[in-house]
Image (tube, rainbow, N blue to C red):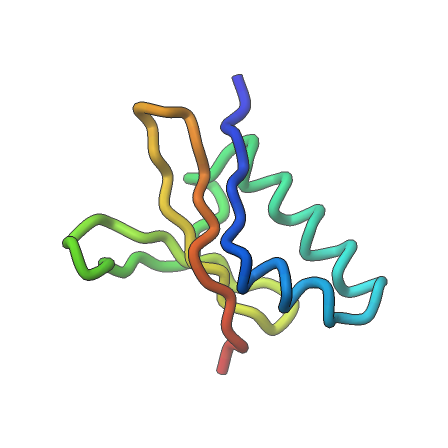
Length: 83
């Protein structure tokens, strides 16, 4: 069963500003995260509360997300340019 995908408003604004082709690729990647979040994490980080936050690097962007297993949700928290 797939997770529900929740995206922060600031991330949506970033996506909206991207060229259409790049935006579509990133959205397709987010759908892959939705199906299997553990397979697309490139590294792990922690939020201010000490929760594990996964980071997927794709198309020049670092996508920070938290997998809420109890509620079956993937929460896209932040998207920043990857160095």
